[in-house]
Image (cartoon, rainbow, N blue to C red; front, top):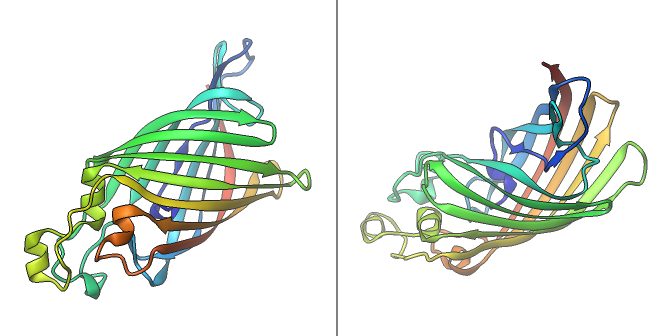
Length: 249
């Protein structure tokens, strides 16, 4: 679903590659935070503010092996983590009668192909905490670099969920239907969302970046047909300031 579900942390490990022996071993990453405007839950038609955290591994060197670095081109493997906040009737009165959904943490990874002016990726994650379901994310970006400091990328996004994922966020059981204003609904696996994301990164200097992201997704299939869904259109906007940190070892 929308990356606005990442209310705490995003971890993106760049592709792995072999390189010549480096003089210095270490890890370089970016960490930061900023405001986020998003729907309250999947299918919500109202928006509210939240705080967004970001953590990204840029490069790791240990002996003759190097991981990451934006200069790495070609195929590689990347890790992926997504956090989805809880959904409760205490927060959203219109959901009274539905069971609360605990926060979920998804771990996984996938393949990415990086070219000078575009990239393509496919990721698979599992909810190790929370929903206990599989999701697959597919996407690509075209990259523009108007100046040495400004990088803009934009491209389509697709997210597919299994039966457990669909039922968790879009299904309504018979018991929930009896206790709420929603009809019973058995949500099935399939394409959950299709959309596009635009990201602009401005490098203030070698240490600090400002990142602005706007995403639009439209709920698909059973996600759109669910009685819980008040709006198929899901928008989010966020601004993050990150700092580059390097540790040697």
